[in-house]
Image (cartoon, rainbow, N blue to C red; front, side, top):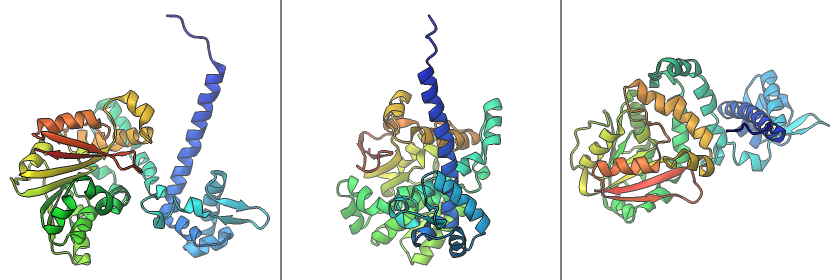
Length: 357
């Protein structure tokens, strides 16, 4: 096979792509800081202001705010007035960067970049010797995931996700038994419990801290129809007890998702429904590369978190990008004979499975 001639134009395009990636990574890191410090929220309320004024309003050190603003201005996030040395966050940009912009706050998702970078050395060890990095190594994961849950699940759960299952809203309004698998800090389940007071809700989670967070929020909201239990989702010991089982972005993190799916099938009543939300990957790399928005970002999360925490527990390590074909096959093997796939028009990254036995 002849070696193709060196393509100088191809080199220049790829170099520009890499330089753009460096700038993009830097902007994402600084956007995470802007979110965590509340700087974006503060600036969205201000007219053009000096760095000192912005720092004072946010209660932060002015020197650090000034340098952060330098990154934001050169990155095209914040506008700068050189005449009077002022800084301004346009409303169009604020609509994607502030807490008020939920569920469209991209700055909250930028927190994944420093979170994943914090375990780089341990991941490198796994590249050399195999194994995985446990959940405990990701110190900020619960908080970041809680915000991601708010954006990707809770904000649209009642109005857009529940209607994907024909008749489900009415059934919940009348009263049904619901299990949420891998419920995290319980925000999604508490949202459902508040919206459907006649139904009964149970959340399963392996993390004691997450279970307590769910209970605390339920107490704060005055909810009496929801409970949280620390339990292995692959062996909950629950048979024919639920009309609905949900799993929001949690199945792919399980060490043995095949066992979890069998447990879910066993916990459902004969006419019950399993509602699964996961990444809209395809099980084919070439299709993901051409059609899936944020594919490099999602594969990175899979490599540096989802896959490795599964391997750390001796699991299959399927990762977040296991894809719809493999997921459907596992659902069928677990006893689900009827499977529907749905997507919301504005969310090309999420895929919803509605499965019945």
